[in-house]
Image (cartoon, rainbow, N blue to C red; front, side, top):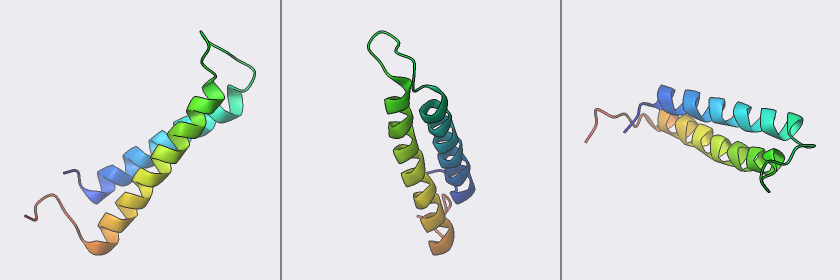
Length: 66
């Protein structure tokens, strides 16, 4: 398992990438795919991963523990 810091960073980056797609991809459509809808999906996944990283850091769950 990844450390709490790695989970926080990965979740934050995913959230920011989703936010950028949601903000700047509203008028585009690529082969039936709307980037703004994909951005919302990435924001949800990134937010959940960030919350899990916060949970891991508060609870002290680390990759070294069995």
